Structure formats: C-alpha cells, structure tokens
Length: 387
Image (cartoon, rainbow, N blue to C red; front, side, top):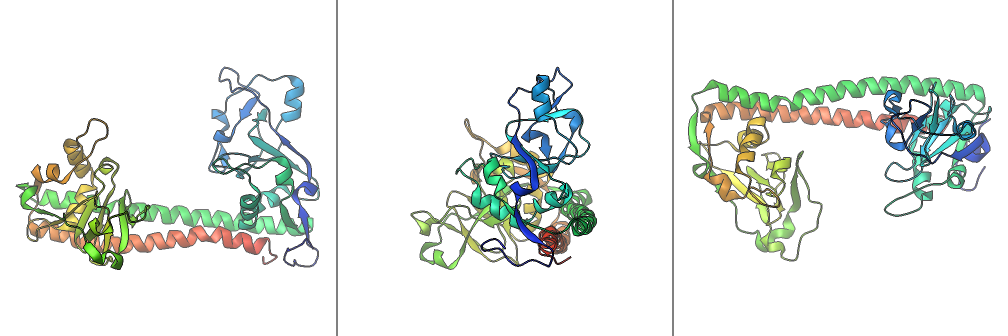
C-alpha cells in the first residue's frame, strides 16, 4: 500500500495513473479551420458538460505523420491541462477522424484497466483532491503529463471493474433522471410568482399611483448596533451574504429588516434586488444600496418585490435607469415614477400565494441539492470497495 493510502478490499491495489497507461501525451499545436472538414480538431472549448457536439468541431491542417501521432481512438480519455477547466476529462466514444489540441492531454489505458472505470474515477472527489493539490499556478492552474501520471487510484481485478462500472453507470443515469425531474419542478415553482402578478393585475380595477405615496426610503445608518446583524447584499437570486466585508464606517450601513426591499443601484438592470420577508433574519447592507419599505394598505412589499422582478417590473426599471457610463436607478427616480397598481386585496391575495410558493421552492431546492450530492457519495463507495 502506498504511503498514506487507506486499506482496500482483497484483490485491490493502489497504482499510479502512469502505470495504467500505454501513453499519456500532449495534443497538436495548430489553428482551427472551418473550411476543412477533417481531421476535426478537438479543443477544450468543444467539451461542454462532459460531451462534444462533433458537428460543431472545426477541422485543421495536419501532415499524415502528425495525424497518426495525435489521432483519437475509442476509449481514449482527454484532460484539460490549463485554465478554469483544469483536470476536467472526457471519455472518447466512437470518434470521427479527429485529433486533439495542445491544451489537452490524451491518456490511453492498458488492457489491465477499463477506460470506463478510470473515467468514473476521474469524476470522484479523491481524484479532484489530488488535482487541486498537484496543479501548479495561481490565476491559471495547470497540470502536465508528469503530474497527471502521479495520480493514485485504487485498482480492482477486471471482473470487479466491470461490475462496479455497470452499477455506477446505472445509478448515475438514475441520478440524472432524478436531477432533471427536480430541476423541472423547481423551474415550474419559480415561474409561479410572475403568474400571480399577472393574475392580480388582470383582476382590476387598477389605480394609477405615484410611488412617492407608497414608498418610504431608509436613509439612516444602523449606528453602533451594526455588530448585531449579518451583512447581506442583493443578487439576481435575491438576498445573499455580502461578498465584501464591512467598510471603514460600519455605522453608516443600513438596517434591512422584515418588509424591507433593497437593491444595488448600479446592478439593478441585472436584477440585483432583495427582500427581507417575514421569515428572514434581519441584516445590514451597504450604505450605497437603495433601501426602502412600502406603506401598508397601498403597496404590499412582497407583491412589489416580485413585481420588480417580473417582466413588467424589468420593463419599468429600464425606463428609469440613468447614467452616461453605467446605468443606475437611485431612489429619487423610483419615487418620482408612477405605475398601475391593483387593489390592496388583490395584492394581498397574490402575496399569500407567493408565501406558499416560496416554501415549495425551498423544498424543491433542498431536494435538488440532495440529488446533486448523490454522485460524490456513490463514487466514494465505488472506489472504496463499498458497492
């Protein structure tokens, strides 16, 4: 057993990747040429989501000797060796006449190991931990063939590889089906608030209302109590922990408690709007943010938050943003505007539906998160002899 490696089932052994390969080599340096149909020239950017659309892969100019040296074969595995995708891999299956680019490393397995078994290992947490620890470079991490050869993996006999690979493939397919269903459910739930907004507006009658009557700006800072609250910001997904720490004047940060809407005026066109609902913990946010509340009986805060994030709200925001270099929407421009509002009762009915919907969205998101954790757990069992 290699130093520091955990014990394995009988018949298994720890091996280095280089010991399992007939070849580990770099790709060909050339320029993609869309006027040439073949050989096709596989690049890092052609690998998306673990698959390749070969119809979109360009050709390249290459000599016969260069093509022979770089020709991809069924069962080859290619790795991204630099950049943000460093370490990501692709199992080549029934490729067309194709070669691979220099930013890829090609691995060709010996007969003692199944390419499918190796490829499954390259999706595991153990593999990624080793890649992160061996990759060189800061802003642009990279691995080379020598580093890749040093990766350690557990190797069972061939019949056990076959059995494990079959189970992993079957269960991964089931996970993908479950993930697709959960994503569809979450997408359907997230599509409901705009529908509730449309429904409330369709009930009528609508009243033309200046927002200055409906909104109350929060201007003052929290003062010395800022340490009692979490620091939050607004993103396209809503409320989120702030990326930056509290600045030099924390007392200027604004309190955002239940019923508060706030947004980044410089990112409003991107949908960076947040809302502290009645079940959310309060917090503080940047003094540069626009923060306001609504007047009860005129404008429901939950209704208005989802209205701002709806297609109607997006169109409304675009009419108000100003700025020569970067468009922004300060509170005074928002307050000066007018819009058509449904009756308070219609807003309240929609807001209550949105409250139920948020609970359902939370359940769907938790389910999707649990599904997304399944592959890692499955692969830990597979390469620890637990299947």
